[in-house]
Length: 222
Ligand code: DC
Image 1 (tube, helix red, strand yellow):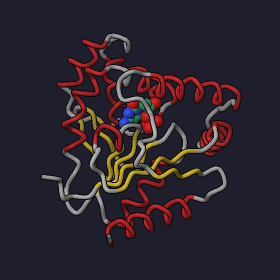
Image 2 (tube, helix red, strand yellow):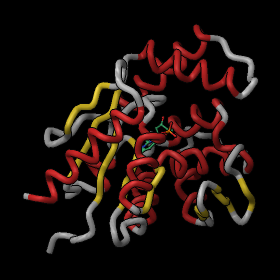
Image 3 (tube, rainbow, N blue to C red):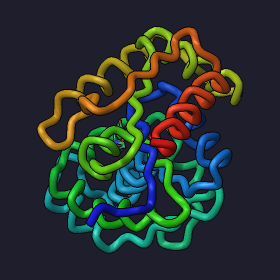
């Protein structure tokens, strides 16, 4: 029987703004929110702390099974330690993209992701929410923007946090991360055929949120 709890799957590349959009959609609907990228970031951080190489599939996956991960509001806890800021670094973004290539790790994280599907509904953001994790989601969005616009947004974001930022480095890093996320064999970043494309180069955050809410209400009325 199909799962009656609705999921809005929002997938897309790094720095597309999908996290911000997904959280606002979840708040508007009173839905739960899954930031699946945070799970891969936590695994990158935890394995680094344990001196496990990110390319060691079996050790990374085995260690991930024992991690105690909790989300409380905006905070993320790893084995009861608050890692909310630590997982947001550029280095953990890169590490997340490296550990995410392992099919065995993705299998370990699958049940945990499914457990977020709770009433009244879930907004799930990531790379494979619509294609692999919640293939029966009634609404699938592929949210993207050009590499240059995404790099510019990330650059401004880092400057806003008073961090040293170099536009050329950010652009190169995004290109490499896109190539890894799209080129891997396990659950690559793809746009499912039943997803709606949302290009945000010339779209404000509130316009993107409104687009998704409108599509969701439309689907639910059918
Ligand atoms: O969304 P993010 O930037 O926090 O994700 C970090 C990395 O995690 C991303 O480069 C690829 C990986 N990821 C994934 O493989 N599958 C997901 N559902 C979410 C993230």
